[in-house]
Length: 222
Image: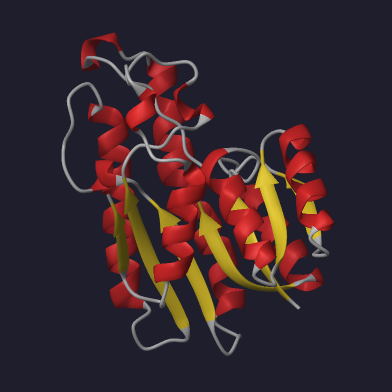
């Protein structure tokens, strides 16, 4: 059975993607920093009659990521990687702390690159494999009080577009997903979004992504 690896799978869009993929017949490897939210998603997936593996991982740790990829690919038939994990800190640039800058770049950019690099050699041995990078519309245009966050998303956009070209003649498809803000715990520690009622639910966005996915270079959900 095919397994899909999803980072940031404990909450928000990652959780909803995991549940929907499971409902469509896939088994899921749930990756995240905290075990408890992953276990909650695991229970829901198992109630559908599918398998779910909880795999706590710090995607900013290069060695841990490569060890994890080796273990997972040796044990399971992984055909898809969804790089969904992300963090955001918002406000005027002069108010951004060094820690905030490191977190955004380390998780959003380095984490995506590390995970992709670790799984790519294995993916190339398969008949068909997929890498899906969840980016957001912050990877399409600049936004007020989001300078570092947008910079990280532009970086992942460039990474994705380059990989599309680099892997054009291989069996590995790379898809960049650009979607607007969602009503998720992502905003819990921020007052950047004043009216969350206008935001889409992560379930709606997940449904659109999965329904529109045809191994194309990009999906835009606005």
